[in-house]
Image 1 (cartoon, helix red, strand yellow):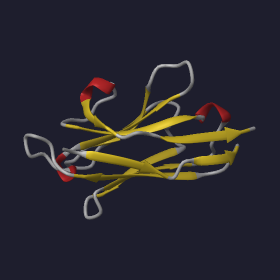
Image 2 (tube, rainbow, N blue to C red; image 1 turned 30 degrees about the vertical axis):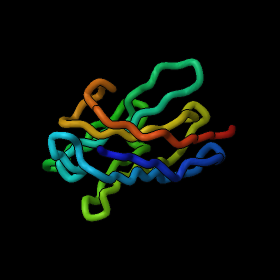
Image 3 (cartoon, rainbow, N blue to C red; image 1 turned 180 degrees about the vertical axis):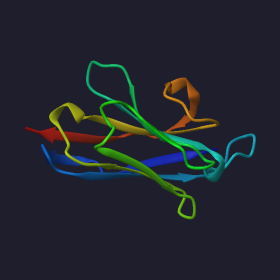
Length: 127
């Protein structure tokens, strides 16, 4: 069973930076490990649907970003540490949300693409 644990969230001011981490352990029923999984970050603000933020593939480390994340957020991974990161710069109040990491077979922007999810970490950006 894959387990994902996010960390790094907190309360910051607008314009600040944060780096979220997601540590993975275990493997899927089919034997897939972190190193062979696409990893994504999503977020969910109160009263809103979960939305895609960024994702990174397991091969060639291709990345995709939402329009709101482009130019401000960077997703990266360290397979030796089984960890994926989301570096967030120039944070805005509208970035306030619970941030979730997810693991899946392939790169995608839909939550349904991913089959394992962490519990989330709260990011609050004050104005």
